[in-house]
Amino acid sequence: MTIDRVRLGSTGIKVSELSLGTWRFGRRLVDGEERYDAEGIVETNEERAYALLDAYADAGGNFIDTADKYGDGRAEQWIGNWLEDRNRADYVLATKICRPRREGDPNAQGLNRRHLRRQIDICLDRLGTDYVDLLYCHRWDDETSAEEFMRTLNGLVESGKVNYLGISSGKPDAWKIVKANEIARREGYEPFTVTQPRYSLVDRAIDANYLPMCRDYGLGAVTWSPLAWGFLTGKYSRGDTGHEDSTAAADERFAERYLTDEGFDALDVLQTVGEEVEATPAQVALAWQLHHPDITAPIVGASTVEQLRENLGATDVSLSEDQFERLSAVDSV
Ligand SMILES: NC(=O)c1ccc[n+]([C@@H]2O[C@H](COP(=O)([O-])OP(=O)(O)OC[C@H]3O[C@@H](n4cnc5c(N)ncnc54)[C@H](OP(=O)(O)O)[C@@H]3O)[C@@H](O)[C@H]2O)c1
Image (cartoon, rainbow, N blue to C red; front, side, top):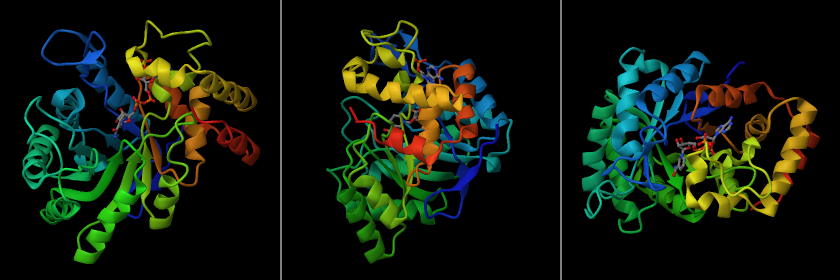
């Protein structure tokens, strides 16, 4: 298996074509809800997190995606611990700031100057490094003016704490990114050069405007949940309502979002192409994004090393133009 390097948007750096996701590191679920004030099920515990990081790095991966919020800080902390035995410079670290950090504290969230400046130092401390390669705004913040956060983010780049800026989107609001980058261009600030939207064969909301915007402005598109929380691995069947081994599917949005007729129709196409190229559905779902001209790097999630190895095997899958088109043509859910 060879994980190639690709250019990260219009930046000058090269990243693995598959990024490693760490959302589920230390993520604690209590009755299906993410909480840290009570005992519950930890999706990926510390030992498993190190095993996943080792497997990814040993396979040649260099692009690690995390956020201040993941596992209530544990994901960044564990990556930092893991890096102590590695060469920091070999990895491209991306983290995110914005999502609420403390229940009930309106200032422990958002993109206001106070929170960004304070939080970047917390992130760097946990990661055990003095810079992150890529800082994403985890979401757009309607409560802070874009002038304020673009100026503050520019200051973080100038201080050397951050190399490049990105923005992650819940909704595919392409115009907001264009607006922020217009401010950056006008004021001479560092612009966003990378985006992080949700995208999979069955999550296609960004096809209409967001991806064309990325293409036109030369923004990288690093996509999250490329396997639709495991649905595109083919481990669910029509009539299923969940899966007892899966914490991803325990999320109440899973069945409603993916266990639909349209979802299973898409899976049928994935399985047919998988048989043609002798690859698993998960590998074909990722290979489809690797062949997509507008996608920079999907972020793979995995709860075991076996899953991760299977997913990284997508880098060996070749799709013909016809197979790519048939996959692209499936209806979105
Ligand atoms: N910017 C954002 O707002 C945002 C949001 C979400 C995620 N992300 C990033 O994107 C990353 C990936 O997201 P995701 O975890 O939702 O990705 P995903 O690939 O859609 O789902 C991953 C889950 O699918 C199941 N799975 C994966 N590979 C499998 C395989 N080969 N066989 C069987 N099951 C498999 C596992 O869950 P089970 O074993 O429990 O079934 C795994 O935890 C995150 O870690 C994070 O870094 C960013």
